[in-house]
Image 1: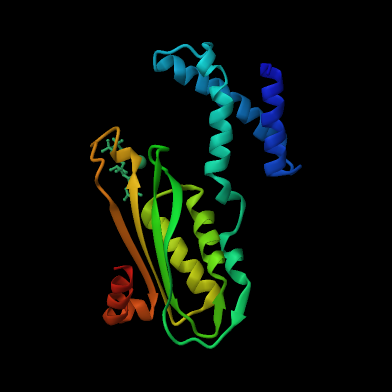
Image 2: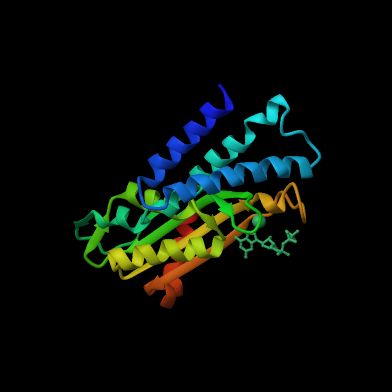
Length: 211
Ligand SMILES: Nc1nc2c(ncn2[C@@H]2O[C@H](COP(=O)(O)OP(=O)(O)OP(=O)(O)O)[C@@H](O)[C@H]2O)c(=O)[nH]1
Ligand SMILES: [Zn+2]
């Protein structure tokens, strides 16, 4: 495939993602600048952007970044808005929700699992919708703490439960092959709202359900 064909594909992908919003030309221009910058980066790193394996890399990288940041182009709370009225007074937990995110400091992936629990008031939502909401916040340039808070706030704002809690366990690639190089380090964050903030027994129940 020729370079022109590949550029056309990227432009088409941009149009698919951004629609015909005013500003699309600007996005396309910035994308071209960015792809030139990636070629410069390859040179700065001491390699040849024209060699076969790297020739298409600027396009691949742009495509990959559009995918990593898909969540910027949606409001993840909307997934939760399809609610049901079911009487349930106990804890509802979805655990081991796999996610992949992107460290905003190094543009290195961080990934792991989110465990989410809530005690409803009147509204409950579909279980898969909770996982979709997690993806929407993960697919952005993130830090783990903000991801935890955005998830628990979405649960709290849309479902208005008695309380909600999230625990995230993740591995940060920026701490593995570079920098401090601690490949076994796992980062655990928690965020609580409502009754989970006030009641240590509920937090214990959450933790015991995690096993
Ligand atoms: N709190 C928090 N820190 C993060 C997260 N992801 C990456 N970091 C940290 O962000 C920090 C950025 O530190 P800087 O000193 O500005 O960057 P750096 O020189 O590349 O740091 P090193 O990684 O220590 O080499 C590092 O300590 C990372 O471990 C995250 O999700 N939450
Ligand atoms: Zn990082």
